[in-house]
Structure formats: structure tokens, C-alpha cells
Image (cartoon, rainbow, N blue to C red; front, side, top):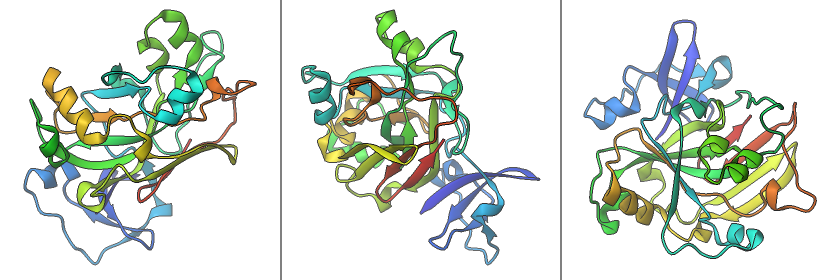
Length: 265
């Protein structure tokens, strides 16, 4: 099932997206359905193009991110493979919608980079979870862009500020439920900038897979429903190119994930 959150005149609503591009409005959110409320199978449908799509999680308590988690990205940076997941966080105020503008002040940063990522959305409370059971705690998956101000990220000596400017975490357009993606370690992932291919890889390149990441995080802190794990980015980031490529005013950046969709900003 593909859940979508959208804006209409009556406010923000949830629905399920069909292959023909129509939406069945739902009386409950995906969070409420996970808690036991049944989805409806109504004859009523609306056209996706007639509404404004919002990010599917609305607001996450935690956005947990993973650095250097793709082998091809590690190779391009010349870094060593981390012995354990390298975690950092983005603030909830970074959340952005499909089609939303990624904004920054040039007085603050002039090195804004894209990072295509698979986002994992937690569906139920997870604490001290074994890796073998970890995928059972996933509500679903969506596309994300871990937008990064590299001059702040590298200049600060730690990554929080450079990763957490407002609007720096677009997500969407849909939340694909976990039952539709039984193996999150075999998804093609790509990023384009103004139509030019920048990143192209597969989630099989991850050093630490989704189950491993959930288990690792849950040993240290509680993962709650609606929390998001950004699982790392593949090779091809602007910082690692020669010459380096930074996003500019008016650019169109798109993240695509197999079986999930296309996120444009």
C-alpha cells in the first residue's frame, strides 16, 4: 500500500495512492491504521494532480542519519569503512515536502549538496531489538534528500548545523508499506540535478543494512512510531566531484528509489 498525505481546501488529509495516479481518501492516517484502525476501500477517488502533496510523516520525533554507509561513497571520499554505524541527527524543522523549495542564506553557506537516501519510517516502539526481528518494526519506506551545507558540516567539526538548516530534509512523495518491499537491500537509487545524473547505485551497497541499523540504534535509544532513519547516500555527491558541484538558486534536484517513486525539489 502507498500512503500519501495531501493538502486540500479542507486541510491536510491522508489517502492511498493507486497505480493510475488516483487517491482514495482515508479517514485515518497510516499511523492510526498501524494502531488498529482499518483502511477504507471507497469508490471515491481524486486525481493526484488536483492536490498538493505533503511529506508522508508530517513531523518526526527523531530523524536519525547514517554517514559513510555506501561503499561507493566511501571510495569516492577516500575514507575508511566505519567499524560501526556513524550516526548523526537532523532536526524535525528540516522536514520539507515534495515540490518544496530548499532554502538557505548565501551569507551562511555557499556549498549546498544533495544526498539521495532511502528513508525508513518506524512503525512501532523499538528498544533492544535483535537484527533478525528488526524489519518487523518498519512501517514503510520513502525517498529522502539529506541536503547538506558542506562548508558548515566540515568547518564545524561536527555535522549537526550543516545538516539541519530549515527545509534540508525533503521526504516523499509516498510512504510504501513494508510488506511491498520485503528486501530493502536491493533497490536502485539515483539522483539527478537539472536532469543530469549525479548518483546511481543500489541499496545493496550499504555497509550496514536497514535491519542492522534499526537494531544498532535501538540498543542506545528508543525508536518510536514515526521516527525516521536516513540510511546513507551513495557515491556521486557534489563535494566529491572535481570540480565540485553545489546546488544553486533555481536548480531542480530529484531523488528516485525503485518501487517507491520520485521526490523533486
